[in-house]
Length: 265
Image 1 (cartoon, rainbow, N blue to C red):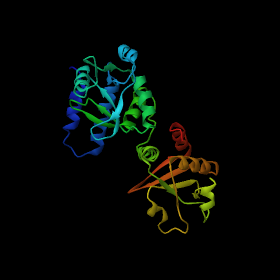
Image 2: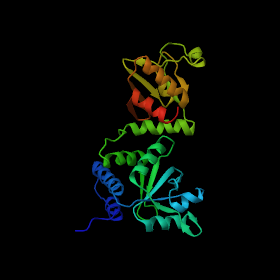
Image 3: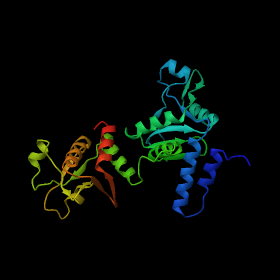
Image 4: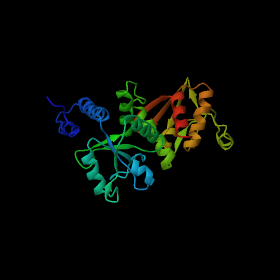
């Protein structure tokens, strides 16, 4: 029996009529793995790339915003789908669609870098049956198909998205001080967040941070948050919990600091 094409596999996933979320998500991950294990995967090159790179098909993978305004990369399972997309959206040079093959190692490195730079999604086979994939899911599967462990837990996706929103969207976070006063500490970069046992809690909502407290939370930008987490880690904190809307997300302090380093914060 012949192997399903990715388009056929996407169709089965999209037409799944069950109500089991775990099954639906497992089918989605199967789609990602199937794409990443293909012999040929295609991407788009940006028209602004160097002429030599375009001619040799070595230009970087194009990164832009998708139809929903979300920063994204594009991958395709078939050249024909990629070329149709390229022609429709004007990715052409001298009437030639700017499409090229891309290898798994380049996909892994490019998406891994992109997830620390505000890129949120990967569009797969746009122009036919397509998938709007979360970039963290695709990066995880890049590692899985190469026999390695995923680099992010599912709850850590929330942390990554929040940090990107802070780094590139101006969002702020809030933390309670270790002492009752914060003014001079913040001004002179001496702020140490409140550590309960080995845990620091970072709030995404100011009202939630201050609710029922005997001290007032301070607000922080992304670079400031990176610094106070490093300071808390030196003071003995090993875990960071993000109090975010309806649920909490946690991550080890050392892993969070590594993410800050990757984001150049």
